[in-house]
Length: 335
Image (cartoon, rainbow, N blue to C red; front, side, top):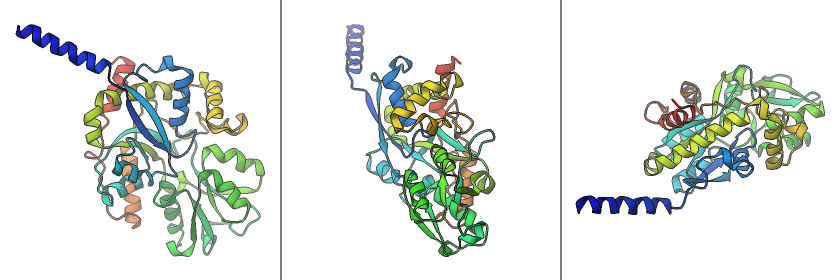
């Protein structure tokens, strides 16, 4: 009798699980296609057979943000499940918002040898010839407290400029070229997806770049709350397995043209404007979704030493959980 009851209960549980709705993962993103979230979302629609678990254990819901720091509130309020952070955003979330978070996966790395490094430009015919010339001039960032904002401060302070010696203007990355073209700002950061547009004008030159200021950086990674991970771990690993497979497909040179076609559909940009994507002229994406944790710590330490962060946050081991991507990789690679 007990065996029969146990079997009945097991069947009931299986039936309940079979009928359960997929977990909707609300994922923050700020730029496409270098942040691959929306590209992968479109890839799911075109090649659902590549995604073993989508629609079964999870569903994807990308949510657009101006940068990483605005996602802190989304995680704090429970309106966001996975945040795309830069190192300063993690430190601010922990120190200011008192959030307990875990770095779970790589999104993108900047300044990796053989790949793109973010750079700042000025007009060739303008008054700025060196970083020191930025005194009493205007610089743009996507949002205060982001990695781009911290990099700007680091570069300026390294050349004798205090924070009050120049003006900061916040703008979407897509609006950087119009801003500098219309003389609303004097220097702007160039992300890989907009490099073609800047270079096509012939009017700009590099003022400084990320590799020369900070070295290789883990500029984007996914974070989650540990209670959410504990409650939904199997579905999250399923998602990461599918995502890892998708990242490898997108960055495979054999799939470059189709990946570009997907990026064109997502961003509404031309083939020429997107030709940089998913290869050496783009930011680096780990094929195993493995973030560079020492690089995260390095950027936080540098920002704290410059008094750009309220306190030094020690990332590992508490704020790191790479067991999910390790499990996803073991499944995918059969090891």
